[in-house]
View 1 (tube, one colour):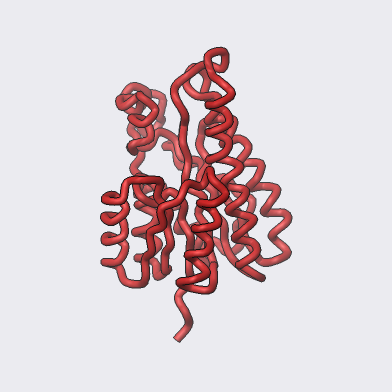
View 2: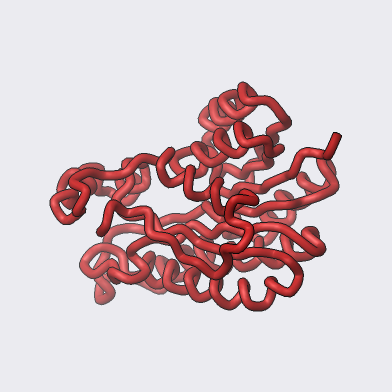
Length: 245
């Protein structure tokens, strides 16, 4: 019997990350996921994934900190000794601010988590994947819409993630490693409340052609498809999951 594949999902304690953890386990993956600080939420995610079978391991780690990244991959090595997939989901928006009102501290933190941390995770994943694997980056429609009046800093970090996806796909393709991104739109998660705008989806949903916000599960389904062999000839793609927005 073939060994189960192993995926590391960053920011798996809630929202899109938690939904991706559950669906990955359901699809037959063993899962290591990171979470920033809410241990109770992480336990809930862990239990939901275990119900689908396989092994699930939660690691408290800040992907904006090199030590957190090292700890995450060390956990993969210690428990499984292999890595077949990486989902760079961990991300923060930073506070709502125009560019004129933003600070270097905001930019430093958002780019550190969303882009520098993701690139570092990709680098560590490449060391372990050998010849074959899949990386899925969770970007945002903000990368092309720009985030004006809300969080240009966040949009810029996701624009960088799009470029990272395309460039790395070209570098890693000869190794049999696929690199793709999904670009969620207005999704009903806690991200908006964390940024101080709990009603953001309801206020902006009029601009979505399908007429509603999306769910974390709908985004996660795209993530798991890109990890799977069903997407074996898909690389360097940035797929909107945004209801047409």
